[in-house]
Image (cartoon, rainbow, N blue to C red; front, side, top):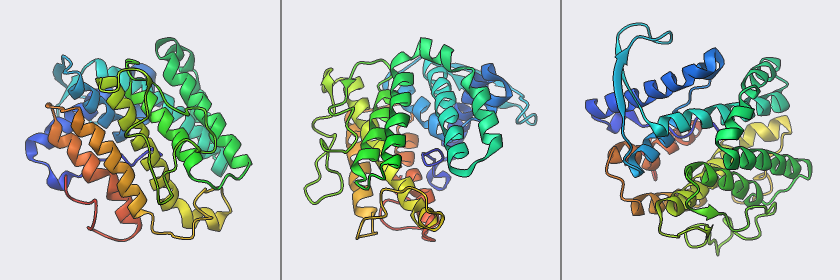
Length: 310
């Protein structure tokens, strides 16, 4: 599910583009601690998470300028914070499982080698972020089980990835656990039927519903469900052709945009309740426009619902 949480540069000012590049370069700088394998794993997805948490918690930033191996010319600006350090750690965690997924799906030996290098960092990550690392492992195991069993109810895998993203966004553990977090069939939330009701009112257990952590957790759960189903819809034709698992193959209606719009609406609803002040236009750009870019490109469309309104 890497590569969907993007910024749409068409609607950003010059200053906002510079701010986003500074966040991206700050992430790269943090990943330098993981060597070449870490820098190669740098993603825009985690840059968004760094910006989001940085804004919600109004964190102190360290600013600087430097040249780097990736971009030796010209000198470029960066900023780092507690949130960019955390997002860099999550970048390594997600990249590790992403490489394993490429190995399992494509038999890519280079991906297996990269996962082995990234896997060396897992013990340190688990020591710092035990809940997130544990949730990631549980999610992968649950998704693998659903794939083996050919589960064709998309709620199950979508909710699974939603649980993981909720855990990641609730980085300080203020929001409690997910309702039905260990479900493999999506029974607690029906996101595809006509009576869909999900995370917006019941995604938190044990935390303060209106706390920043609670809203971030629910926002992450909705974002994760959206990303899983967005990726599944984009890959549907190729997965059918290659006879790979995709829970959407049994859906009679292949117009998934209404469902996807509902899910990202749940996500943005929680985001707006957080009332972020710093980088708010950048964050809205991603959530209202950037996340649709690959979806639009896949369908050969340049506009329409959910696009270019960041």
